[in-house]
Length: 302
Length: 244
Image (cartoon, rainbow over all chains, first blue to last red; front, side):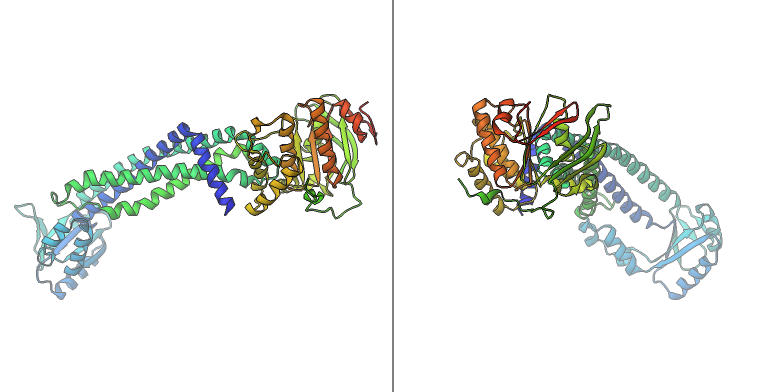
């Protein structure tokens, strides 16, 4: 107990002594972890949109109401026999409804006012072996765009077909570019954060070299000497992480919550910020550990 | 004054007949090619008081650094408390040092800590409990004659008093050996005598004391064993000796 106490007193003293430098390290950790969290949130927002618009199926075949078991069986058999089809799954109205509620979980005003039992039809969702082979399905089911650009089929039981290939590709590409872009900037900032924190630790060790010398002389172990510095790095990094999570939450309130009720796009909510928060913290701990290893390396010798 | 049991070592040497410190044909050559010690043989028994004398650069400090395993002997063997220092792994070195107290010319006190805190620091960083600290620190400070200055800061003390604090810190963990490197180097003759009385007192209760110095008056007055180094070699080893 007294040992823990001593560690924390030394850490607090170190942060105070190192004020400006520690602040620089904390800010960099904050920016880095904020961008990291932002990339994760962007990916989640786009996943929701992709889910809502395409249900992650390259081709969605909506069935006529009421759905007959015979129709489902016949269409499934027909599709599965096609070499172009990698996978077919049937989503009944309950599942479609549940999915709608899940995707729009953060917009109760939407889910409460839409009776999904009447508006969302059952569907067959098709993954293609190769997106370019869509025409093989269209031919087998006799599908073609009508005057309103809706794809209708001669095969009985089908209400309409959504060809999501292009949309899916586009959205996936945008998501990838955005999150990889932000993640790379985050990575550069994370590396800077590592070196800035390592530098504060090194400066702290230099400022306390007399104390460290005495600790060595009286027989303190290496870990006893190093742990306060490791804690200091961890505290700096976690302060940055906490600020980053708080800012991400603010960002969600300012930009996302304002759209609520004004759009039919599914929106991320508090739960999404909560889901990414642990990852931001884990990244923060990682930064601290690497910074600690680099920062105290020079003091490894007895 | 507190009773003599204060400084009794908690690690009695099991080999009572073996020397406390033993150097066997020790040579130390630094990386820059300077030979600091050459073919040194030296045995110091438990409870001895030994002066190591010689001009600057004669190897006194290197000898002390070898005993603390701050440096390794290039050739030969160094034993402290029966242990071959070459065989002590780096993570065991702190445990070696807990058996060795050290005192330096510049006291090495922390200016932002009080007398009590400076001594307590030595126990705190080796994981002693608050209970042990609260018991031993006032006891040892009483022993060195600073029982009334617990809450003073080093810059409020005279040089002699600061050196007493540093001796208290070196002894608070009851070491087997006390290494003193020019402990009177910054003190006037009268204060030096007081410090020597204190070191003698520490020695009388069983602590082996090795003191590097070139304070001729003190060596001559104490009439203890004198080991003289010159250019890294032992040129004289005399019991009840004088400086030169």
